Image 1 (cartoon, rainbow, N blue to C red):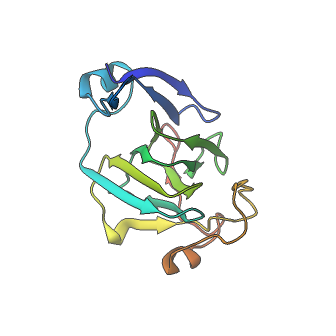
Image 2: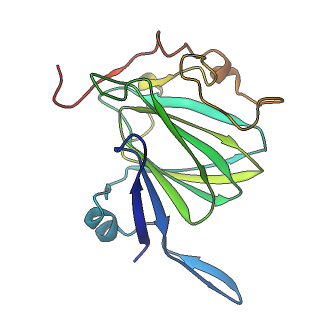
Length: 186
């Protein structure tokens, strides 16, 4: 069974997953995904795309998301290294709208970020990150929010020498960013 435990974070739709890791004298083995175990834990079991990124220490990627009808849920794993991973609720009508949760991810941990959240991370060391997404990447539906928007007040661990893509340097603030509807609200 790959899922050892699940923990709902400060925004209950965002879930920290502890994986079962089997170490021995050779290293370790872990199942990253088994559909039946994820489904029985209340996590998604259907993914459309798998992404891999390498980031040097200090890199911030995000805060990214896709709008409907190509909204993505993401299951984020660190293969090697450590990141500070952040999910920002952008669902209009949500009691957590504009709030975020952040957690340090390292091998053996995964984070489920559902649709309706902007996602980003900062590499705390050189890091390989793998993430499974529920819908394919669509450049036309891609959006972003400024990573250091003061309104979000994200306490990024590394503040000096942050490395950003040219695209991420141009993201709008939270107030200007496109948002989602919250289930059950109109």
